[in-house]
Each structure stands twice: as C-alpha cells, then as structure tokens.
Length: 299
Picture 1 (tube, rainbow, N blue to C red):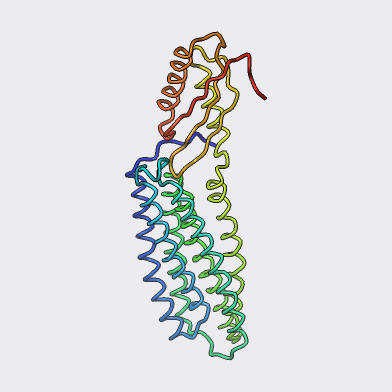
Picture 2 (picture 1 turned 180 degrees about the horizontal axis):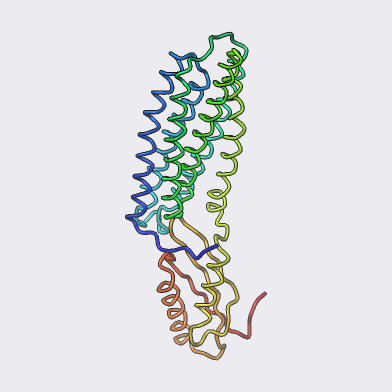
C-alpha cells in the first residue's frame, strides 16, 4: 500500500461537490425511471428507480459526513470530527443492502402479478442510464481515490450498482420483448439484488475497520519507524501504533534511548522524533512519543 499523501480541505470539498452532483443526477434519473416505468409497464425500471433514490440518500449522507469530518477539533472533540467520514460510508453501505432487499421483495411480488409487456422505448432510457451512471461512478470513484475517502468510494460503488441494475433491466426487457414474456424484466430486477447485496457487504468492511482503529498501512508504519530511528539519540523502537481518523493519522511511539540520559535530553529527543515525522508525513496530525530506557525494553 502506498504512503498516504496529504489531503487538503479543498480536495475534501471536491468530494462534497461530487456527492452533491451525484445526488442531483440521481434524483433526475429516479423521476425519469419512475415515469418511464409506469407509462412503459416496466417493473425493472421502477425497481431501478428504488436504486436511484437510494443513491440520492447515500450521496446526501456522504456530503454531510465529509462536511462534518473537515470541522476542526474543539473542546468536546479533541481528535477532530474525522470519524464522521467512515460513519457516512457505513450508512451508504447499509443503504445498498437495504436497496438490494427492497428490490428482491418487490421483484418476487411482481413476478406473481400479471401485467403487460414493457414498451420498447424503455430500452433507450435504460441504455442512457447505464452510460450516465458508469461515467458518474468513474468520476466519483476518482475523487474518492484521490482524497482516500471510504465514504466517497462507497458512493461510487452505489452509482455502479445502479448501472448494473439498469444493464440487467435492459437484458430482461429485451428478452421479454423477444419471448413475449412480461415477467422477464421482473426476473432481471431480481437478479440484480444479490449483486447489490454483495457490493453493500463488501463496502462496509473498510469503514468498520477504520472505526475500530485497525492499522491502516504497513508501509506507513515502516516509514514512520525508519524516520524515528534516524533521529540522533534513538536506540530503537519498542512499539509503533498508527490509527486513521477521517483524513488524518495519529501515531503512538515507544522510543528507546540511553537509560543514563537526563529527563531533559529524553524530552528533547522525543520532540525531535515528533517534528521529524510531522515534517515527513503531512497527513499525520499528531505524534505521541513515550521515552523508554533501552535497558528496559519490553516485548
């Protein structure tokens, strides 16, 4: 895993903007799908509307989560508000799971209800939706990768899942029109459910790991160790713990020094270690250094 680079507030605000754009596009698509599905007698399109409405909700959650995450530390939140970002990602992932279950239930119900064949023009609508959602997913995904946001990445997957359901609906309606089987698009909508469910479950793991303070990067820990050990007076490291809070990292170090040094000298070395790490890795916000005598190294 690459060493995380600095994420500026401006870039995070681009993440907020990508979520707002995504929500606006999805709201428009949801209305188009609903009207076309009702007029064109296609449940796959109506079910697809559920996914688009879910995308509107998830994009709104991501925008709010990022807005909270960039707020500076205060008296009640000395470590900042960064945890709002993975919390938003979890909500988005749960929304994916909810959408999958909802589409499955309604699809099964529709397969048991007699209805007319979808109109051929619904295929054009679905094809346009697939193209728009793939482009939107790539755009949001690139922003999420740049700012290393689990919430924005999850939102990108949400857009991609919408493209998948639309593609399957296209296949279902095509089969239905060719075979004169009106339930084909209902089965297509049902087939999309496990795909969406899988993505929802898969996307929930990274933010949960972050909230549980799982070590984010072995490469980063190795580089932090190398930087600390390069400071004059450091005999070695006993422990190196790193946790990610939103877009920032916090480091706890147990530094080994000569046991005969004075408290003043140990304090000076600790500050040099902290300053070296902060200078080398801008995304590390705080470094807590605990000085230990080298002769009392603990396992």
